[in-house]
Length: 436
Image 1 (cartoon, rainbow, N blue to C red):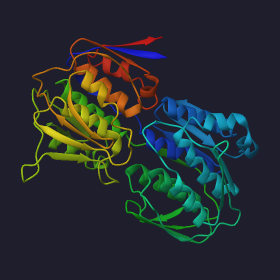
Image 2: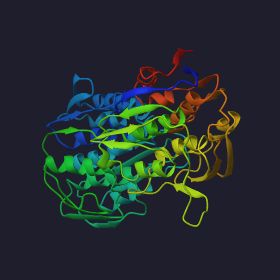
Image 3: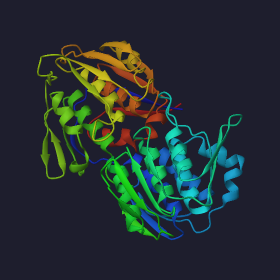
């Protein structure tokens, strides 16, 4: 178990570039199973969750070639379906939340898909109904063994259909799209997710020969094709890292330039930070954040406390609410953070309260933050990272605090952020990784 020892109070300065998008990588890597031809993917973040998925693909028989840092070629011309029934597969796949998106490609290409109940962050209930209801609408049969938590879908004669998703699930939409591209007939998916990473997946599939229209909307139409070919693809920069670095600059009163952010794919994220009072400039495809001694939270037009809430795209991604909450602790003003999607994601606030933050946890979904305006610094403490996003939020808090902090369970942070300590230390941070 690794520990971060963080000495707070250091001002950062310099340029930093976001890694490739983790959430896009998990979709794209599963999509390589749709074709026996080569698919080359660039800008892959070599983080724990992504590398574990690549290892799983290798075990399934996918040929993987690493050309350079972040650039890989995959060839799924000899997938071992028998491996899907082994204990090794169950063990490996159950550790990864993203492994659920293996089922759609397997169902489309081979008519069967098996998966143990996937793991991931413990941030509350993350149901999979949307995925399997979608498969059933395409004509697949679904079985779930409650005893060992094993999902199975079979469908040798799928047929295109209309479906209205019960929620705009990103992974659910991706999974159903990947199943539908090789399904005969026309599939219409309404209330589809339309995040940039889902758009990227659809564009890549179209380059492979799929026929998907309505990309970037919540109404996708898919004309099934007989087969898909190979292609090349480059992942977008990770919008969650971009948002994390904006919040970090504000909390530590640092001057940073975030390079190559794909600004047009950040959606509402920059505007929401602006409503927190954080100044920045768009310089080409970079974001420049000047040193800022104070930032003041906006209010609504009637003067009431502003609410920052997550919502399906183009609303604010839930993955950044932890960062917004931490940034608010040193703002001038108050804000209500409303985490609608996951009922356990705000439970890390007790650690911030221990550091001296003024936060009222209203219920599992809402927290009110009264900012210190940098007049009272957070104090260093010992804590543990409960999940990827809360872990980075706690790291940001520790970097702004007085004294030293120790963050345990940093493997959670490593699952989503590549060499985060090394990259931040290069800007002037003081983070020591201790392998306990």
